[in-house]
Structures are given as C-alpha cells and as structure tokens.
Length: 151
Image (cartoon, rainbow, N blue to C red; front, side, top):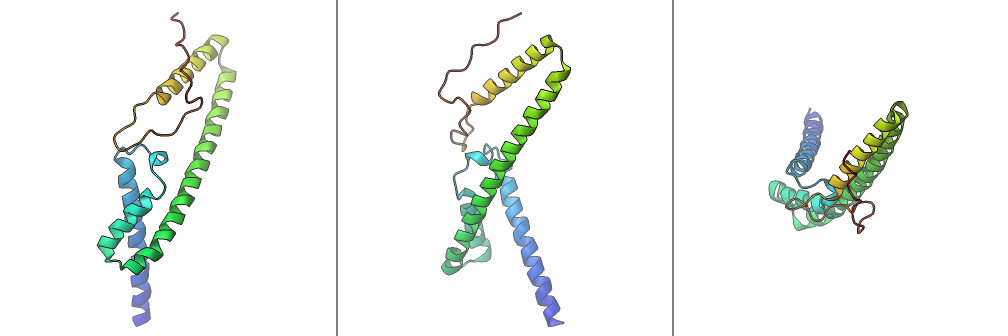
C-alpha cells in the first residue's frame, strides 16, 4: 500500500507541475506581452525557475540541473510556434486564393485592398509595454505603400 501512495504522490506532483507551467505561460501570454515572438530566449524558463525556486525551495544544485531542461523546452516551444505560424500562413493564403476564385474582378480588387490595409496596420502597430520591437515584418525598412485612391 505504501507503494501506491508513492505513485499517487508522484502523479499528483507531475500534474501540479504541469498546471503551474500552464498557468505561468497563460498568465504571461494573457497580460498583453505581445505574444511569444516578443520574448527573449529563456524568458519563460527564467520565470519558471524563479517561481519554482521560491515555491519548491529548490537548492542551487537543483536549479543548475533544472535550468538547461527549461531552456531546452523553451527552444523546442519556439520552434513549434514558428512552424505553427508558417503553417497557419500557408492555410490563410490557400483560403484567400480559393475565396478570390469565387469573387468578381471588382470584389477581388477590393479584397486585395482590404488585405493590404490589414498588412499595413500590422506593420505599423506600436509596441506595447514590455514587448520590445516585435517581429520584423516582410519588407521591413521599406516605406509603406501609398494608400489606394478613393473611389
């Protein structure tokens, strides 16, 4: 019976660690930090390690062993987010191409104007507090295109 309790406590500890990680990440993301791309490498790992050091009373030796694990996880998450963003962009481009095929020439022109306005808005967003400069946009450094003529 003692073994069952050990297994139960171990599972509970793993669950609690996962909930804590998820909570920290969700809290950080929901505070308007500007998203994942704006954070420096190791930012989440440092926050987790600081919090766990306090909450779990980690020894310096434990901190040194845990730090590379968290940094490796951070790198893996960055890679996944980057891949997900690229895949999402591809889906949006395919979807827009399919929609465009259904539209009349005038509607297609208006859709392209809407998309260009959206891109300009994204590229000219002001960085939020704690966000850094954000991710460089396509054509960074170029002046934005002139607005379409009023009809």
